Image 1 (spheres, rainbow, N blue to C red):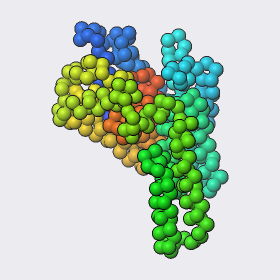
Image 2 (cartoon, rainbow, N blue to C red; image 1 turned 30 degrees about the vertical axis):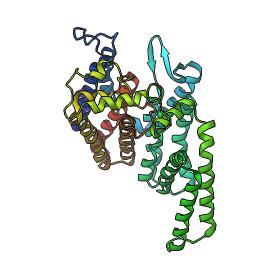
Image 3 (cartoon, rainbow, N blue to C red; image 1 turned 135 degrees about the horizontal axis):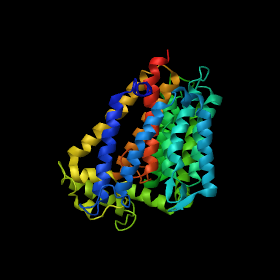
Image 4 (cartoon, rainbow, N blue to C red; image 1 turned 120 degrees about the horizontal axis):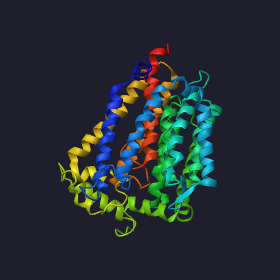
Length: 418
């Protein structure tokens, strides 16, 4: 009877897509890190052996997720969130520093990155808060509470410092927008990013003149809202100050490696043997695959070890080299089907909590996927964001698995939510 209750109502499309992505991910890690074809795939001294162990441990983890009462995730969301915050705080005392970032626990050879799991607990608490009937995200106070739920872990993660993990949390603004947050927040964010990039390419005076002209044209043609000239003047003034502050931020606030990544993205003063090496080699690997690829285990860039960190952040380059354009498109289609399926299921939930959590899961996974791929083709700075279910590592695999199967459990329980 217990087994039937665990299996009842599960969306097998999501499960099968998950299995397919994990399987392809492991085979790619094997290809990337294999040292000898005669070596055992179960050799835990090798990355592919350890990843296989991590995958095997996902089965009891998934079973446990499905065994729990679905209502626990909503009722204890604040408790889970508090535990997550405590784990982040504990890093400043017990954390292990790797490459200047104190974002890992390391006990007896076992490494654990809490920020990966905090994404899930943040989504749970945010879904719990937004599901209250009286919450209106057009209300400033309630906006601040939602921002605080997201902002607290972001602040602690930035102190580690881990910009890549922190940035993923910002994607939850799209969930807030779906739940009623005014769109001008998102528009303002994109404008700020655009100004930041432009200010590093052209003289800020041209940015100010451009926005001043746009503001003037909007003012004289505006018929829908109050034509308060001070509002337009204030907006242009803010943009002017921000535009002229970019160079100071770039030169005096950003770390050297952060500036290098931006330079690589913009093609400014890039040394292909130093800061531009990783991206240059990844683009060579992807481009060399052509239409159908060189064949599994036949990637010359992969076998030659030319692409650093290829089993983690740059793992998609192996797909591009060995399976070519068609293989890359196949993987992208599988991810897209998973995103669309989660969104479809979210829209058909019976409770606001399950629906909003589903949006969070889809947003997290899509952001990881989009940023990781964009990094490899020079559309986004390299910030160390893993590809879900593909990149090597137990923390990311288990965290994504828990995140996904909590939603699978919530969806399976919807027949009991009337």
